[in-house]
Length: 73
Image (cartoon, rainbow, N blue to C red; front, side, top):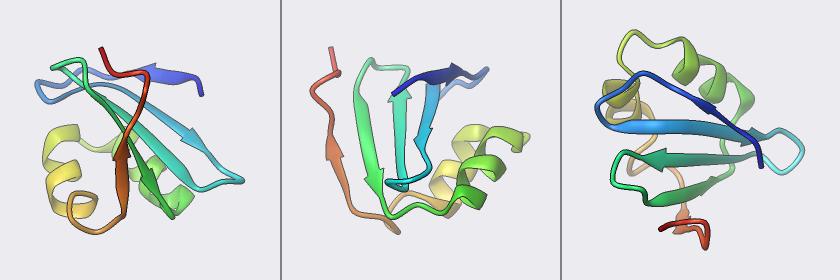
């Protein structure tokens, strides 16, 4: 999945697979997590957010099932 770099102290890049509704987040630590069942709206709002980290905490963390990706360093 291709990811878009973001300017954030929490996130390094964000990717999304619309048909599968998977959101892939690379954190500044190098860890990559894949969140399942995420609507396209959430991906769009995350990219447009003034603070990507704040949006993640308020709208993603704890709301969607996730797994650590093998792409993690």
